[in-house]
Image (cartoon, rainbow, N blue to C red; front, side, top):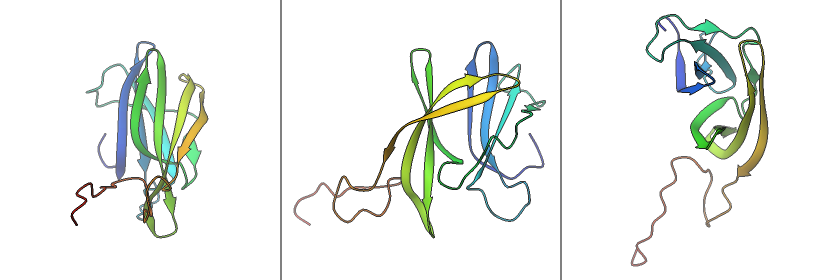
Length: 135
């Protein structure tokens, strides 16, 4: 796709189609956190991606930006970035994609990861723990 401002794009195959989940700044305001869009194509290198009729499929700064894709057999999970106030990667949320088609999209929240697994954390993305006990 050309002429778009997109971040954290995921492309994957499901049921014989290629799907693209991406966060777009459709109003060109610099907000690439909250509007998640879905497209499909016949090939991952296609230059003709079809927009889903429900776009944007999510409008929510707490889960509209992708952080990765997980697969467990036939199950597909979208990992999302939870944004805090002026905080990149405040939390991580995992959603299972239960329905994806040219007319419908449904994902179900499965779990969240908050920055509570080590002292002093403010977020869960881009975290580097100091495991050197001498410092």
